[in-house]
Structures are given as C-alpha cells and as structure tokens.
Image (tube, rainbow, N blue to C red; front, side, top):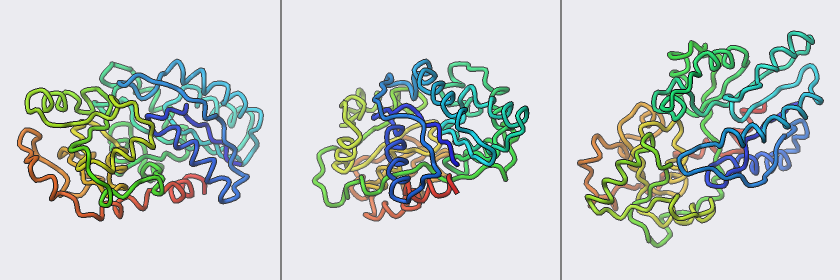
Length: 312
C-alpha cells in the first residue's frame, strides 16, 4: 500500500490542486492501493508565506497518527513535503519494530537554497535536512537544478533523487492564443524579495508599467488561469523558483514568459524567454515573444504522468 500525507489545501497555491488531482487520479486508474490522508478543507496563508507552519502541524500530525495504525511491512509512505518534523518516526518504527517500510518524499526547497524563505529568516535547518534526506529511500524534486543542489549542499546521492517536475492539470488551462488580451504583464509571485516583488514595485512606480499582481486580485485558481490566458506575458523576476509553477502554468496556456538568467530558470526555461537585466527589457516587443506552442514545453508534467512516477 501507498500512504500519502498531503499538504493543507490552499487555493492560491498549488496544494489544493495536488489533493484534488490525486483523488481524481486514484479513481480514474483504480489505484485502491493508494491511501490518501488529508482533506480539501480550505486553508489560508499570508501573501508572503508558502505555508502557515502552526496550521500545517495541526493538519499533519493527526494524519500521521492515523497512518501509523495502518502501516504494514512492504508499504510505501509518501510525504507531499519532505520538510516535515515527525518523518523521522518512520525510521524508528521500521528499525525498532522490524517493519519494512519505504519512505519517499517530495522537496519544494530548503535552507540549502540561500534565497529560500527558511534560509532568509535564519532557520537552522541543515542538520534536520540531512537527517530527513538520510532516512528517505527516494527523494523527488521539481528540476535537475534542484537535484544537483541537494547533492552539492547536503551530500544527497544522485541515485536517490529523481527530478519529475511538479504535476499540472493541462486540461485546466485556456489557450491564450485564442483569448482576447486584457492584461499586458502578469506577476504571479508571492510579495517577497526572493520572488522579485521589489523589482515589480519599481517597474510599477517608476516605469509606470501596467503590471497586474495576481495576489492583489483575490482570484481563485480557475479565475487566475482565465486571467493568465488574457495576458500578453508572465513576468517572474524571482531570485529563487525551483520549478516556477506560474511559469509552467503560463506555458500551459500558450503564454510567453520573461525570467532572469539564473541556474534555476535555465534548467526549465528555453533561452528565448530569459533576460540578462530587468532594467533593459524592451517591453515594446512582448507581442513578438510567444511562439504559440509553449504548451508543448510542459506536456511531460501532466499530473497523470507525474503521479505514475511517484507511485510506481
């Protein structure tokens, strides 16, 4: 059996979607061997945060308690977030009780990335992370850049890490080539420096560029996808973005993007969409940036394909 510990459902992030897609995938493929722990009760976070950590532990600890009663030898435990205190109990159970349990985790980021919010705020997480990486049998990440970063910064063996990308629902995207444009430039990041929000503010206040910040609009994910298709370009000046979910969503909508020349983006974004310096972007040429075939770049991240790799 596969035991999946999910993340709180946050509609403005991708966690609510992951839960919904996994339920749908399990049903469509008859995967009764996949047990899903969690619910789709809405959770809310501040615009600067990915998770509310106190809320997360109120959410995840009862799920882990319930899972412990169902574990058996030969089972696989999968955490949607490997950065979860309590995972280490799997190691104690399998060693002290002699139960053969495989541990798989997905990592979004961590203190090994200097731009990640945990590192910026001074979380002393290195030794916790090394422990979690050590006891995991398989670690999934969103890009090859992330894979090699774990190897370099935390000495995780490369053969333990698999780069799968983040799952996407390609059927949820509208084709931006067939939708009337309402918005010139869309920014979909959190309002923090690591996502380039300071750059966005300068472009709005000093250059008077018509940039729409999606978090200001209180859109649901469905509404955001519609607005994305109505945009000419997605702008993401982030210093840190392991998978760049909004960028992939733009590609899924056949919308071009503009991203900085960083190793993270170079691992997942073609050259034509990468700029050298945001101060010298020629915004008058954004109509010529798209190819109309951006969707092909993200077809491999369809959630059916990603889940098949996670739960094989």
